[in-house]
Amino acid sequence: MKMLIAALASSMFIFSPIAKAAQKPTIVLVHGAFEDSQVWGHVTPKLEADGYKVVAVDLPGRPTNPMSPDKVSLDLYRDTVVKVLGTIKGPAVVVGHSFGGIVISAAAERAPKKIKTLVYLAALLPQDGDSLVSMSQRDADAKIGPHLQIQKEKGIASIEYSSRADLFANGAPEALRQAIPDLILDEPLAPLATPVKVTAANFGKVDKVYIHTALDQVISPAFQAQMVATTPVRKEYTLPTGHTPFLTDPNGLANAIEQAAL
Image 1 (tube, rainbow, N blue to C red):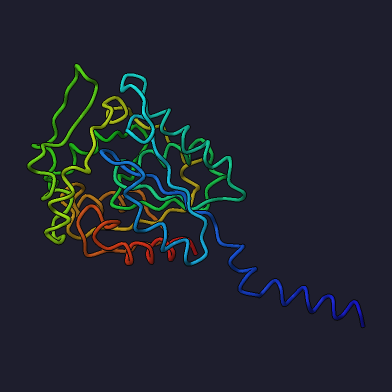
Image 2 (cartoon, helix red, strand yellow):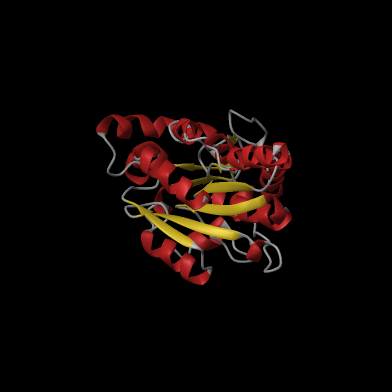
């Protein structure tokens, strides 16, 4: 009888809300170019309130993780994410925004067993040899190209100040449109032109989900669809936003990430 009671108690624990919460994967958030981890500030609390542990990565070369642009590389971005994955128990759900899609793809190639699902948020979903530069050249409907400023002598790329609200906060409330130009950062140049190495044996076997942004001016909806057609994913979601749903629709984004994590 004692053994039966113990077995029942154990079963009840397995199916209890506490046990289910413990089984939720850690969510790793990787920002894109011209950003840092602060962009996730409205999404992280929502995910944590629903029982997820969240780690927001700061890639090197920005004020929150300073480094001279000439020392920053795509390999360093990749290794920064892989190092974070090494501190997490079990496979994580890794979300990459925009250029962060290339970074998380490189991380998946290096450490596929540490990743449960790759979630591409308005992100570049690359094939082997792609880079931000090469993929952007194929996105005929993107509006960012004429406003991208390259400063080779400083080793950085920047976005024309007057265009930032329209590119990154189209459809957003006016207060956010006024604030966002000062939130956009300069980006180390070298990683943007570096081809990513991915293979079918590693990256190709990792589960993938894509979150589309229907009003995007930076990575066009048409190109997002083209990337998914070329590299199929398990599930797709669409948010009625521009390029920065973590600012304009954090509730919708959190819900999509949680659905992708299932």
